[in-house]
Image 1 (cartoon, rainbow, N blue to C red):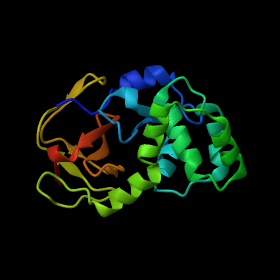
Image 2: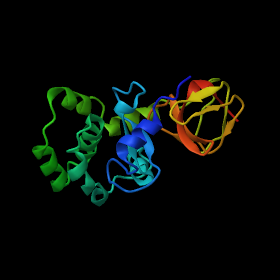
Image 3: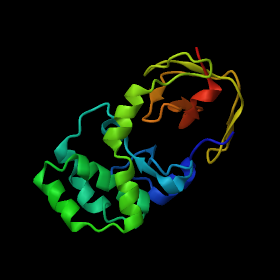
Amino acid sequence: MTISFELASLRTRANGVCELCSSVGSGLPYAIAPLDDGTAAHSVLVCEACFAQLDGKAQLESNRWFCLQQSIWSEHAPIQVLSWRIANRLRNESWARDLLDQVYLDAELLAWAQGGSESESVESSVETPTVDSFGTKLSEGDSVTLIKDLDVKGAGFVAKRGTIVKAIHLTDNPEHVEGRVNGTVIVLKTGFLKKA
């Protein structure tokens, strides 16, 4: 099994900074729905502070997202799409409305951006519970056990069956959770996990 993104590829593209706010740090991959096909081409590397707000764990703080005025002009489509979606969620702010009026996304990118707003993703994750391979509900901070060896592409190791992953983080996709294995934060498919 290959992990659903290539973290090394994202880190190379991002040059060690958050692709939204440019803060320096290790960064977390954020998959862009609905075109997420498990490749880095449809993910954005974000810092923990951005991730917390995107994941619905914290309310969007308007002042934090002034950085969109830079990121929305990125040459990389996933960054443009995510920036547009965040600005759209903040459209009650005059600066966000102005930004949305200024930016141009071609028809395909605009359809992608409009196709699944992040707020819709968070709402649908609330409606669909995250469950392990045996149907047991998983919650934020739970510990899970891997039921299969998983090849962690881009990180250069295999997460062995029986490995316990503590303090998992739920994502906006009920089929994926995040956890730290061998010091690396990775996305894990719930179908290969058992609640510990």
